[in-house]
Length: 271
Image (cartoon, rainbow, N blue to C red; front, side, top):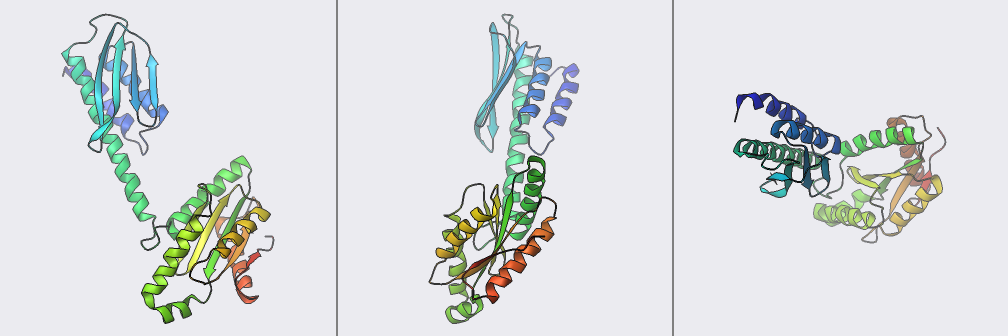
């Protein structure tokens, strides 16, 4: 490859050194580099999740396959309004860019998988406490900007220790797994259910008011498996409190549900 093209290749590598390379602004910058690198009048990229293009031209085309995690994931093209605009050097440059992009996408996939594993409870496959706390912080930040309600519930299996003692640890594990599955089936895709610790679960309900949250949690209580019961506390974010303060109010409501008979939901008092 001609040495004069190396600065553009370095710039492409820097463009792709981001947490999420598969974003339209990043890919548009990549295509602009491709256009300068190859002398094209336009460039396009077609991936499974999106397609991006800049400029135009139909007299000549050069293309390269983008491979992601060992499989074809898309096509990178350079095109020109001049016939015979591309030679072996520009074709090789395009292949190199496709290889760099594929490596960046593969790396992003690996990071995503590692983050998922780090944020997943081994037993129930639900989110774990770490992931829930991170998502709660992000959700409250979004709700603050967009001004929508957020409800949070803490659920605790009633008399779980007694069940675990009588059924053994495999029986206790079976109850936790069954509860996770039964409750998840009742939720929206936008809701987040997590195993928060032991036999306690946390539920994040974006864009959900107080009455709606109670209805959802009552539905979960009703489908608690293996003839067991659970108690829950619900708190709705007041628009100002921290995540820790919201969790604390839900926790107080949960223990009020426990003290007043179990197998029920209680609303948190206003902050």
